[in-house]
Image 1 (cartoon, one colour):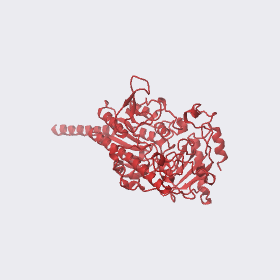
Image 2: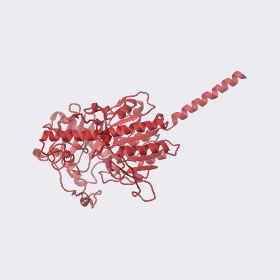
Image 3: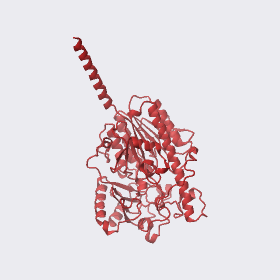
Length: 532
């Protein structure tokens, strides 16, 4: 009997071990989603490029070395509120209704936190929100008041008063304060559920106010310049962005140089207008990039604090960490600042994932992804099927070296806010693996007869929705031969077939994602008239 009992005991022990292993494999992972504001992919060291040697992001680079970096992740509307709405809904701008900075996302449309909560997660959002309505779908929130201040920021919180009246202010720099709040939440949350935390920095958004401790970073360094900071290539752009015979060169796109006298960064940075053009541009660019990268370094150091907190609380091995930004940023390329453009620096989003269960580290993926895919991917990681109302798709299988079947070959983009703030013309287009096709239709979607028109718009913004139309034109860039997007090849007969194929795909995606202009007949008329 003794051998039998010993065998029975060993068998029961093995069963217990197997059951524990199955339970461990079924245990849901925590998800820490970290997002910055306007952090361009080429300002992340792991992506290479002219800024990589400045070492702005050692912690994010370390996550990439331990996990997977996605090379081709693009925003669908490069401006804060619309991008955040697409991330939370899995939908393109026209579907979720947030076309520009005036858009709000009510609780009923805050799909991602709702679905994560239903899947058994404790949800929280801390930092920048920028979607006007209360983030009520989250279990916990502390979000910046509107855009938020860099120093001594105010946060909107739950309380006795109705949204948005409950405010709490903290001393310090916003990147540090947001991280302090997240660390406190991670250490003191009262729940045995896995967590889904959206930790969202304000930095490095304009006006690039960094913590004083970063004053010495890059102080004695000359920041490398873009190839066309001082002079455009003769074949860059089109009449839509330069005007007929360059008549709009001094108006379209806020500049680094003196090119745009109404809005250039030299004015904001108090660069002496007495300097010649080259010296003025150099001085402005250096001050711009140093301030921007000091904000970035502050983000990176605070991410290190978050990672250490996961380790200190025993959650590191059970947490997937995602790092991204709400869009990219023009850092002097084409003498542009800000975002909004469909050019690479503006639409390319950093996207790095660290999953402690991954079998091989340091992976890279060239899959063409956009921000409508973020919610489906996070839901997939949590074991939730993508609902039909979401237009994006999950790419979670790439974490296991499996490429999703029948994936898109190009990503659709649209910027709606014609000439608002930074004088960028309204446009849409496609970014494929090798090419980029852009259609500038040059008119505002706001019209008195349009469903989205707001009667108080003119008084609120000083912008008449009928004014400042610009020429309609197409641009095509060969990203393989011309990665800096210097030469518009649209009228080059050698690219006629490429243009035809991209236009066909552009029409298909506009229809598929309900991005046509049936609600905007004045735009539909312009677009159809100049399509060919």
